[in-house]
Amino acid sequence: MAWVVLIVAGVLETVWAVALEASKGFSRLVPSLVFAVALVLSMGGLAYAMRSIPLGTGYAVWVGIGAVGTALYGMAAMGDAVSVARITCLVLILGGVVGLKVLH
Image (cartoon, rainbow, N blue to C red; front, side, top):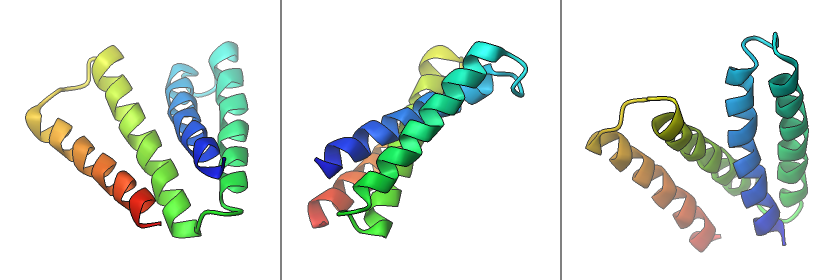
């Protein structure tokens, strides 16, 4: 169960990062509220997961999911550059996340 919660918390990290950008410095109410709720749920999920997953593994997986998700969102919806090199880097991050899970 801790791994499922950790994955959901990582996805919520992407949500709060996207909402933070959309809030335009907290000047827009709805994205600011989405940011706050997603942040609290993401951190709460990370805290719950770390009850049974080691700190280094849990935090790295959480950040990896959030970083890859945010980068992919930027490429798909925000016009961020897409290149073989960028995709390769994201695949390497995912490989590290999977490796940490397998070696846990």
